[in-house]
Image (cartoon, rainbow, N blue to C red; front, side, top):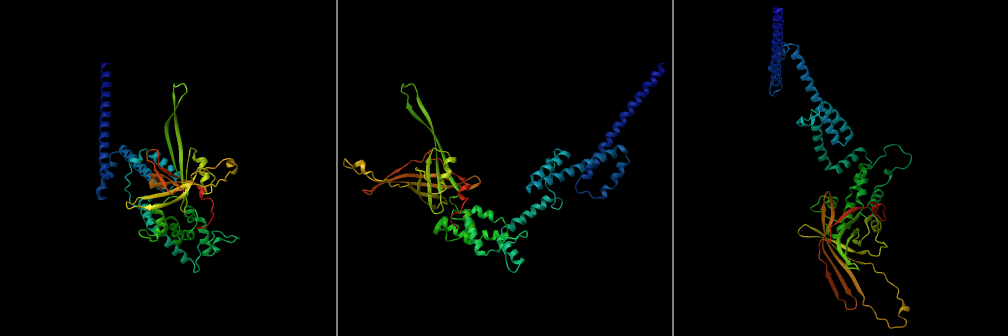
Length: 435
């Protein structure tokens, strides 16, 4: 009985020794496989140095072959995930966000941390990302001379040049039948006397012919003349009149400059003398410019939703509104300033003779009130020329009987908050006169 137990114990010891030796051999084979795999992935290796390696790996048994197959599957899965991720990047650059999200999701399902395993050093022929960067650079160079390119294409199409062609056959008369003079007159109505250049740019997106018409130098020259007057006779340093309109500082006409002022003031003491009220005062300043050099200013506690629609035309019925003229001044320090002289609308009141029927009338001294305003034109954020900063504000009272003028200058403090531009679509919804 004791001998049987000793034999069983020796068999168990041998079995454990065999298992340990097998595990040691498997660990050694795994270490050899990892070393061989890293050796194969090392850069600069020739194909001749890699030929005998698969033979040695295959001679070590089916365990190593299965590990080798799993490694190849992981590499293939990672390559597929990289391809999907780069495809998603390309779709996102093209603006197809839905497709980009789909490819991102597929890539992360394969390899969750694929974003950190991409080095973005692929050759242009390997995927479409590098190729697209090269194509984008070519497109940027082409956009610089897009106008001449469109003109050349229209010239090569037919001997009788037409600005546009109907996309489908229509029974009615197409706009391409109209002469060039009529088309240009339509474009001037689009710009209108309000200088709605945004609508002109949108019209240029219709076709190549409309793009050429919208880049007509005569239209942009007249626009610059209406804004800056005689000071824009020279085109230098700008390449075109359109570039002058876009780059040179100017006030905007398709909206209103608005500022909100808020402060706290002390109220009167109560009748019993126990408390004194404090009031929070809020009011707005509205400033709207017109292309003909006129300007409107209004100070009121009413919010923009109720006031802005009244500022669409100069013939508004708001009593507290101030009307005047403005001019742009380009200083030596390359700062553009706006100076305006505004006054209240004059309303002739009929004389009530019955009021002075039984006593001698004492004539009141007649005066004219005008306000002189100085503002500095700035840009903030992504928008251009959308900010006006106060630099001067004064009141001039002129006595008609003597001709004397009394000037009161106000201190520019925190009560004069900057005015910011807000675009109003209804201001350019209708055209009253062509350019």
